[in-house]
Length: 252
Ligand code: FES
Image 1 (cartoon, rainbow, N blue to C red):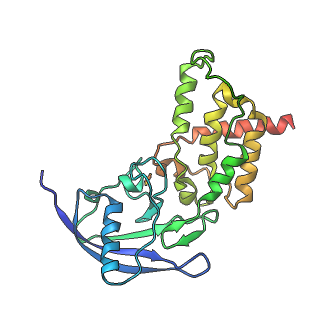
Image 2: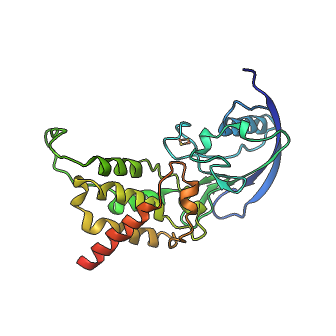
Image 3: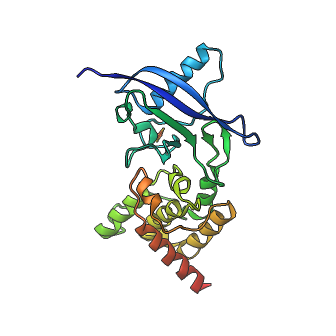
């Protein structure tokens, strides 16, 4: 199958650092293979900029396989671009038309300050995890895999929640910059398993408190986070988070 090439106009957010004001710059890229990924297209732009002795565009990426959650870009006004349930690194240029203008911005959320250009600081999510996204287990020999029976529906739901890669698209998409879907996925995954019971009475409370402290807003109840989540995490997990939170508060 022969691949096509397209020419594009790119409207890219450029910002020196968190303290300076950013602005869009316009660039043109030519002969982009429709088989290439979005990040490969940005690589081509950067090669072009370097050859012109200009500063390349800073952007985050690591695995380029939809696993690490680093490639956090707002493309044409949508987290991870126009396709559904994929990350930016899994987005292909065949999604775009020849001659199209594509706008590329960093995540826009108070909890994710811009480091440079398209890179944002997402350590806020690490701090939320440190507040309760863990389990305490005794060290020792490896337990027998069948020693802790877990019902299949619970195991399936926990696995669905565990699919969250912490990319931040939920907070970047939410009009309140809420990180509720992220926190809900992490709480849900542990709340459904017996291993998660040890910290169950404090986990939701501590993680929600940290989320508030770091500048993320309340759930907007619009469900936009679920639509843009590259892993299809359901907002049903937010209901479980609310229940866990309520139980913890009542116990207090
Ligand atoms: S670079 Fe790892 S998910 Fe995109």
